[in-house]
Length: 178
Ligand SMILES: NC(=O)c1ccc[n+]([C@@H]2O[C@H](COP(=O)([O-])OP(=O)(O)OC[C@H]3O[C@@H](n4cnc5c(N)ncnc54)[C@H](OP(=O)(O)O)[C@@H]3O)[C@@H](O)[C@H]2O)c1
Image (cartoon, rainbow, N blue to C red; front, side, top):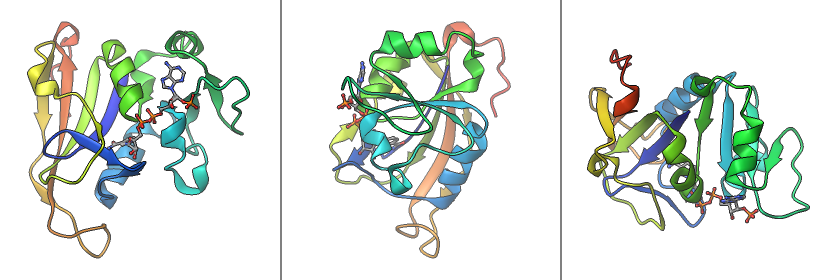
């Protein structure tokens, strides 16, 4: 299973149910990696999507504990085990955990590969991803060059960011990175 997240310089990922910054090139990278795949996320993350609708062109699995929770064009899982059962026929490499904070925390133990966009700035935040650099079961296998956000297309211009990929050490047979 894969995970994809954008973190600020202190591993923050969100504030008041919003992303910290929207960078078009990062959203494009997210789309490139997840199109045609299965995405898993929490009910609060759904609320942050355009029109609060599931992502098109992907199989959507949303976690909620509410017994009557229903979303058109999505499957609902009421526990981590229920989500894992829905994935039993999927190749792990075709599954992406896409947030938010509570779902990343619960699914990281099942993930072999984390695509992490690192944003070189600290924002106000209330939701975090674990500092995976302090987790010796994961290893950095790829780091892109430093790029900068563009005020024409992004929330804010001139903010440095780069793409990284981490692999669980026991699953390092493919060391090519990306
Ligand atoms: N930077 C990034 O890449 C990124 C990506 C995604 C999201 N985010 C940010 O993350 C924040 C949202 O994160 P969050 O932690 O508040 O919410 P979340 O993880 O998106 O969703 C939490 C909800 O998921 C459901 N849930 C959690 N664990 C469950 C379980 N074991 N079984 C069944 N349902 C479960 C519950 O829904 P019910 O309340 O319906 O029961 C819970 O309230 C926002 O600020 C968002 O913008 C950032």
